[in-house]
Image (cartoon, rainbow, N blue to C red; front, side, top):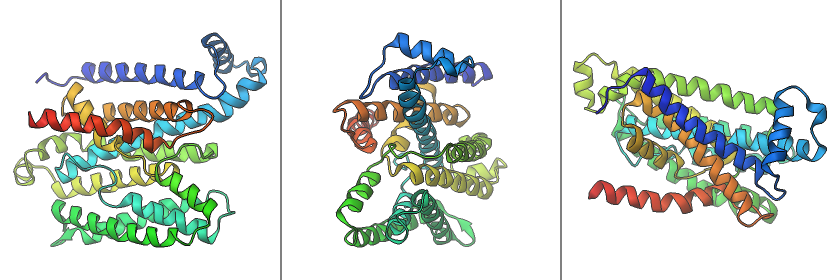
Length: 339
C-alpha cells in the first residue's frame, strides 16, 4: 500500500473535482430546454465576471434560477450521504451499512408526513419537520443503543433496525390518511427528489452543516483507521474509542438528517460510493472521507441529470436512478469480494 501523503490527497481530490466540474457543466447544458456549449460558456463567463446585464433572460431563468440551485443541492446531498455512509461503515464495522441503516430516513419521512397532515400550506414546514423527525430518531436510537453506559455497535445496529421497522409501520398507517395528490407527492419524496425549490438561505445552512459534520468525522480519520483492527486493539493503542464513536455517530446522523430533509431517501449512494472510492484510492479514512464526498456529489448530479433528461419533460425520481444503477454495481462488488 502506498503511504499517504498530502500530495496524494490533493491530486486525488483534484481529479475528482475535475470530473465533478465536467458533470456540472453537462447538467447545466442538458434538460427540457438544452443549450449549446458556446451559449453556456459565454453566459457563464458573463456571470462570473460580474456582467449579469449581458445574460439573456432565458439563460437567467433556466440556468441561474432553476438548474444551478438544483445542481448545488445535489452536490451537498450526495457528499453528505457518502460521508455519512463511510462513517457508519466504520462505526458499525459493517461493509453493508448505509446512512439509513439506523432508521434516520424513516424518522424524517414520518416528520414530513405529519407536516403535510398538520400544516401543508406553511413554507418549509416539510423539510423542517423531516429534520426534526430525523433528529428525534437519532436521539432514540442513541439511548437504545447504549450498553453499560457506552455506545455498543451491535446494540446500536439492532436498535436502528427495530426503530426503522416501527417507524415504517407508522408511515404506512399515516399514508392511508393522505389525499391522492398528497400521497403522490410524499411517495415521490420517499423515492428521492431534488425538484423542490429551496431558498438560498437554506442551501447555505446545508453547506455549513455539511462542512461542520464532515469536518468532525475527518478529525477522527486516523482513529478510524486504527479501529478497523478492533475496539480492544484501538484502546491499547491509546484511541479514545467512546469519543470517536460518539463523534462519528452524531456527525454521520446529522449529515443523513440534513440530506433526507431536503431530498427524501436517495438509496445506494451512501452504501456504494465509499466502496468504489476504496477500490480506487484505498481504505485510509484520511483520503476516503474527502474522496467519498466528491464521489457522492458526482453520483447524485449525474443521476439527477439522467432523471431530468431520459424521458423529458417528465422527471423520474432521483432515487429510482440510483437504485437502477446501484443494484448492478452492488452485485458486482459483492461477487468481486467473494471471488
